[in-house]
Image: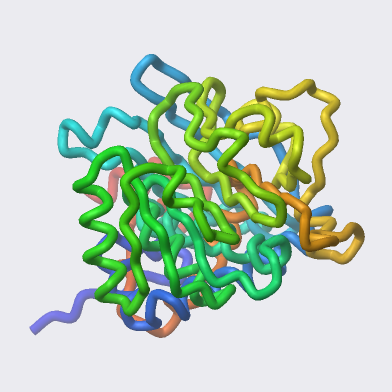
Length: 350
């Protein structure tokens, strides 16, 4: 029986499919995966000046948005393709889908192609909980989750893994979403209270996570719902014309962001003047500026997602799949015997 020649290391690109991503996550364990990924994200925030940075390139339509999110350091270049189409769920599609590429700067060759629909949910949750470790009040025990869709369970598991949160108060305008989240999270050992409205959900919560999907100027939290000392993890507003918080909440909060040029376009702070002061998370993680400073402070993570977080996730996956079966070699690199003879390779293929 003939043996098929194995490709050289430069002749193929490791491809992580959705199926293999799920196998990888389950092999490691969801909470361990999130916690380890958070470490990579934190490391990359701490070397923030090493990265090329630009707001993501977005193509907007009435139905949603398609975006490219690129960044690079001295060794690798990474990008993510991602969409956001809130109306998709009514047609049986995901609101968000994504894939990403990590490449070597030294020769331009891609070294990883990966699904990033599942991975984005994991990295978003990891970033939220990582920031919560810097900004949430000490001794926080209860988190309100307003918006119980695809992100909900990942956020809950991340905050338990990194911040010790095990008590959740859930609300969604769609009761079926809350029922789904309650079922899934109780099976993971969480103490769940399903709430009829957002006002009830935030009662007694020290952390408030908002993760709704509608592309509109919404008011998920009104000013009277937010008391002193809470941390708000606002992850739903992520494009122009899409917000979740009443403007007055922003004026009472110390606001922390990933990359101001992008957040001022897409985040909650699009409601504020361009010179309104914000704090950059990389400086907090490097110890250059403080995070939470007192018990009565309202901290707000105005999260829109930034390319370095996807870079961290791709870097993490690339290292974790080494020596495993959780990828497929993908034939996407031309590899002629003579690099100058691409045409000859084509002819030999006849």
